[in-house]
Image 1 (cartoon, helix red, strand yellow):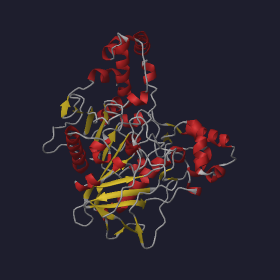
Image 2 (cartoon, helix red, strand yellow):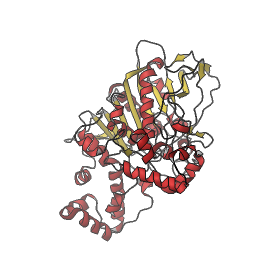
Image 3 (tube, rainbow, N blue to C red):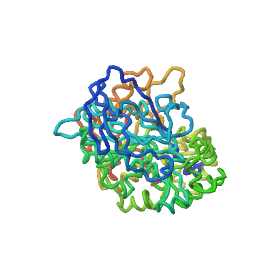
Image 4 (cartoon, rainbow, N blue to C red):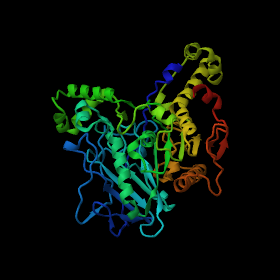
Length: 508
């Protein structure tokens, strides 16, 4: 049983888009960016800009190419609606991910490289801290326009909130020998989009009231893996000062693949399409490309030695990365739905333990009991969570020279009538930490709003100072080897030392 746990796909499902009404909104004064003037609107005392181009449309010859600067424009560009989401398979609600988490299917395009900004003040001498949100979706889906990613509440607390789109799936992560010859490397276009957006922020965010020297990147699931990729990438050096990683990590090379392997997938795709060259692939309609890609599964980050260096584990072990203060963690049921229905027998679990751990098998089985089938199943679930989220987060924390604050969220959202209870499921914390429960249609209770308030306060404090602590909050101490301090969140928060320590000691 335990051998198969280590083969869990790090497929991360998250969210993806909506466009609220802007009735009763008033036009903003013009804000000048490097490429031209933009105008947004004011809603609930927050200045909002949607659909600002940060790169040229990645179409035609720019399909599978590094993002380029957008063409400068004359006049004022109206930026009051979300731009198209990145092209992807038809997004539909499924399992615990209701429509608030899903990209609307009527606005998908290759022309998707746009960002959105929420800020409560544009003028003024004091610049505000910036929070840049990166969506999840397993690198195959996603959008910055998801309802639960609304930045209004963050802006009201003095944060300049930024979200952006990046290419996903075959358009964001296809490698190919011709591309490598053309560009020196290939794949990772989605990650390069993220870097391009961060460069745009450095150049332009001051005009929106933000401080380019106080930028926190954050994301959940594939967005969290993206955060670690940016921390690992030499191309992202100096583009951010803090990081938040919710439910996901690339380490140790589990959610990435060598360039040669990725190139072979690109060649196989070309053969399936019956096309003779890269030029033919670039001219193929996007829908045809998506359909052909269906048989190849998911694409994601590539160890190309340009965006992402090979040997991520060694780089993190040696401190050879963009080390910044970090807030990271997981939900109690993060791995459950990714694992699907799993049934283990006690006999098989004990046999696997002896084969994998030899003389340490007894210690392993003490940490992951398998005396009965019921215990084996429970341990299998725990092991799945350990491998998916806990071990990567703890490993990261132990190697950082900066302060790292770890959390585990056990809080279960109030159930929706007629909807299964999925527990503290993957992505369930996002509306709490971003203070967007109002976008998620459920009959919220007092304890839900209480959890939203203190979790959002922790996140805002960290974005502003690098420390989540503040007045009225349970003290959250950084994770250290001798204390193993982790903030555990139920209906209230409490700091727990050495949470999961027996299991961590076996696996780390």
